[in-house]
Length: 110
Image 1 (cartoon, rainbow, N blue to C red):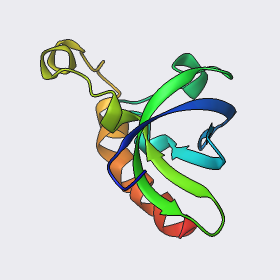
Image 2 (tube, helix red, strand yellow):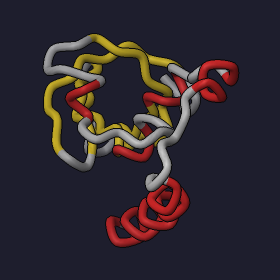
Image 3 (cartoon, rainbow, N blue to C red):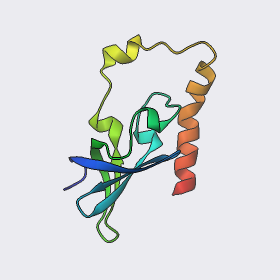
Image 4 (cartoon, rainbow, N blue to C red):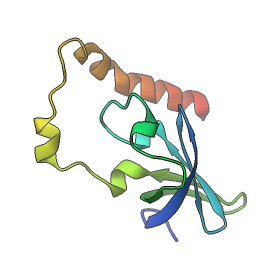
């Protein structure tokens, strides 16, 4: 396994900030920002405990046997479908602010 490989892993936990998975003897985290580019009211609307999913490897910590993964890179939304999804009026301000909030949260976690 190396960076950018697509692996098949199992969902072992779901939190508001992301999804925990297992792969062989590794544990992994898919941060909520790596689940989808679209707004997700609840990760549980997409994934459930025990689901087998594909994810792209972003980082590997061999010492602690931990992975940082991306679900959205392994499961992209086709551009035609993304264009057909209408954002309701009133959501635009949240949609514009979301990337800033994600970056801010990522910096806090680092």
